[in-house]
Image 1: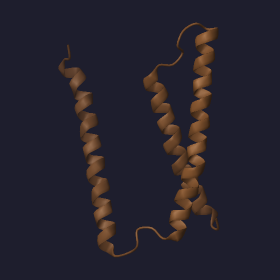
Image 2: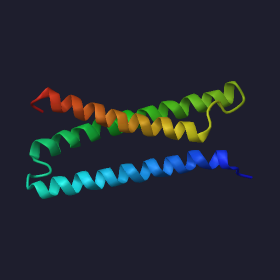
Image 3: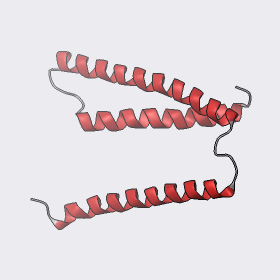
Image 4: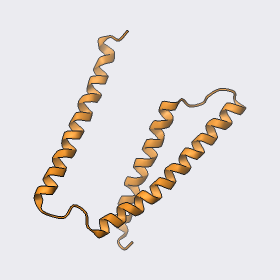
Amino acid sequence: MMDLTSLIPIGGIAVIIILIGVAVVWIIVKERRSGDPLQDERTQKINGKAAFYSFFIGLYFMLGLLWVLFIGKIVVGYVILEATPALIISTLVFSLSFIGLRWYFNRKGDI
């Protein structure tokens, strides 16, 4: 049974998600009204290259995580990590590697 103390964090998370969504929509509308192109050829190339490398970083991370969980199940005899933390960690690796690589390629200059 859920009580009030467990509903407060859920409501807070929902409010944060809604505020982030409103902010993203507001930024997109503001950029479209400015008249400047949203992405030029260089930005598209940077995003594509960052996404390419980020995909393989995340894929290899997930394969390594799967290997660790598999070995842990065989050697130790129980599950070391549950599904929820594994998914959160994998999502963070994918997204943070993309953001970091996009920043790196943008600062690097020529691609």
